Image (cartoon, rainbow, N blue to C red):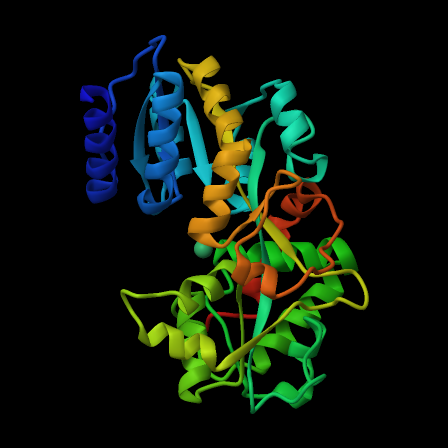
Length: 345
Ligand code: FE
């Protein structure tokens, strides 16, 4: 009980301040976590992990600045493990030399090859597709079926999207570069920019709201936001936003829909590496994968774990097959293109 209390204290402090200090410790029964994933999702998972293993988890929830913080802390960083909501976050940590590889048969078994780093520097835990949200009446069937359609003249002034520099959109463009080359990706970003109804702003859900209110007809967003809007009791107006749109999985006739991961990696400075591996393994097991699916409408990476019934209702879809590690390598180019086409201006 005392142990659990401490876990929650750490989580709450981390969530509030984002800057909670954790004393660097090596302990047989402890693991320290920096997380971009939110406490509402992680608390039940970490609670279950502690109950099962007796290992205490100290989680610091960060909204941003993980890389800078790990860099500044260097070898003295208390963090053993990081959790991010996008491949970009993990890739940037790899590039900065802040992660170390880990070997685990459980992880090899639970996480399919395309969702983990070839050398075990990071492991995907869930996937999410970046889909098109289209107004049920104002967008005719067949009018938008691909990402490419979003850059065509018939979509002029009809699209809302969050910042082009947001990790989700950078990953999407990086994938476009991997699939079609830099010139084609740049032309697409330019075309998309030219079709925007307003300056990029807000988060993925804010775009669906704008479709609902009539500011635009179409937006781009991650799959789980649809589930979260459809079931939002705290902000029931979001149910109306969701009810106004159809979800479209783009490019089903060719290369498939862009898929990103949330994932975990072990820091180079980890003092509790064995416990960190245990925690990633735990998060990749059936029980935890089920929580990700049920509480946050994500797609489990582990085969055989069921998605939420709402997610199942959208049907199966063809996902991109490009390796995530290849996509990650094009992120710098993607950011450069977003700047070049002045996407956010
Ligand atoms: Fe998100």
